[in-house]
Structure formats: structure tokens, C-alpha cells
Image (tube, rainbow, N blue to C red; front, side):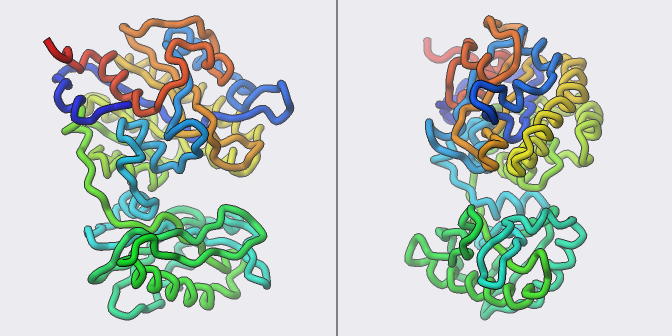
Length: 402
């Protein structure tokens, strides 16, 4: 597992460039026993050719058998132990949209959701309402007032929003209200530590008022809150690795986690081709690029095997050759976690990963997929090891000891 203090000690200056292409929710499962996963079913000649020149394996985001959230999974890819550096999803979303969080603020990620007449959840994402509709609903919720605190309700994307409480003596250490299943009511916010009890009560008051305001707003007639927390202090990638690092991501949460580890956030478009243009425009300015693709994960969560495979094919055609043409010294392709369409959710399954450099030892893997990567030279390894491997292959680490 990566040791950040060791990386601080060993990193050296260089001119080499690292690109980490993260295909969100990349890993999958066969729909039929013995059949292909989404990645294996996709036509990926460019990824297969890259794998043949790389060392491959399967990365474990948190720990064997543990299903990761997106925030901790990305922290692991950047070399930060997600069990040591815990960040609430609300903080990530708020940072991702550029909200000026103060250290004492408590931020929660919100979902507009659908509920039946009994208050039971029927759709955790309210049919993925358009972003414009989400913004209208956020404007309605700004009417809610709580005693002795300011509230901020900011739209993020589609059904997502950010709720921020600002005031004195607020605390993190709170549970979320999303039960992660249908046919049950939302949970109450509960305090995990005694000093968080007043903050939990404020969130529950806000939710009750929100439910009244949204009662007639089908399909978004209720809210779920996820990851309420305060902003932690993390060492920056410049401190840890000596890298000028930049993030290219269209979704706010991923910009948020990148910002918290000190990356510059590059403005980019919604589609992979626009992200490629952003990379080319800023190529000379940075040593490390985090390049994020979201829609694989969305398709997996929707249970759409064919759409997820299609997104992977699009990445193979539009992104992989474009990055390769820039000749990065280290080119990594991985995912933050697996999102099998079969499960319609994140899962614990290790993630296919490849690393190509002039100094890697290419293995016998000739195709990029789950079963092929099981035979790769990296084996099954912690995702936190990926950044030290990238640094070594970029010739940016000096020797340890005499």
C-alpha cells in the first residue's frame, strides 16, 4: 500500500508525463453464466493493442470483498488510503461545483427521488430528471429556513444537488438517508458521535420541510441525502509526488475529489471528444492528467449491459488512440470500481487495469478484459499501489536507502 511520507521522500523532478484514464465502473460480470462481461463483449481493438504492450492486473479499490463508493475509490487511485482519508460525498460534490466551503460547513450530496403515497422509494434518481428541472427544484428548496444556521441548496447535475449547512458548532459524523434500495422509506439522519446530534436534528428538520414542498412535484417528490460531512485536510499531489496535476472530468463529484488532492480542474465539455481536446490544449502545462469517463458507470447502474459495452467501445475509438498519440511516458487505463449491469450497482469485484511505459515488463495479456487481466503481471493488487508504480515507471522516484 502506498506510503505518502515515503513518496514525499523519494519523488524527484522530471520531464515525464503520466495519464491515468479512469473509465468509471469499468469492471463487470457476465449476464449469462460463462458469457462475457461488458468489457469483454465490447469491441476494443485499441485497448487490446495497448494491453499487449503493457503490464496488466486487477486492482482492489478498498479491500477484498468491500464495495467502494466513488469518492474513496478515486482517492485510492491517487494513492491515498481511503480508510485513513475519509471524505463525505457532500464535500466532494460541493468542491466539484466550486462552492466556497468553509471548514465548519457540513455538506451533503442530495438526490431527488420518487416515492409512492406511503412514502416508500420507487426510484432513487427520480427518473434522472434533466439538470434544468433539478435547478428549478433547488430554487424551491431555498425557501426552507432553519434556526441559527444558513442553508445553501445548489444544483449539481440531473437529479443531484448539494445541501450545505453553515453555522456555529456544526459537526460531521452523520449517517445518510439513502437506504440504497427500493420499496422502503428514507432513513433519518443519525449522529455517529454525540456532538453531532444537534446537526442531525437540523438535517432532519430540513428534510421534513423539503418533503412538504416537493409533495406534488412528480417524479421528484422526495429527497435523499448522502455523505454529510465537513472538509478534511489532505496533503496535495504536489507535496506527495512533486507533480503538476490536472483533472479532466465532466461530472462535479470527480472534480471535487481531484480538487481536494490539489489538482487543477480543467474546464471541459460533456463528451469524450471534448475531454480529449482539453487534454491536447493543456498537454504542455502538466506532468499528470486524471482523465475521467462517467457514462460506463451510469449504464451499469441502469442495468444496461449493451449501453455500457457501447460506451466502452466509444472510449476505445475516440479516447485511447488520441491519448496514445500524445506519447505519454506512462499510460494507465483502469476504473475506480466495478459496476456490473447484472447487479445495477457498484460491486466489490477487482477492476481491470493496465500500465504501459518504456520501462514496464509487458506480460502475456493480449486483450483488455477481466479474465485476461487475471493472468497479468500485476496480479490482484491494491489500487493505492498504482501511483507509486506510475511514478517509478515515469522515472520520478529515487532509490530508497543506501
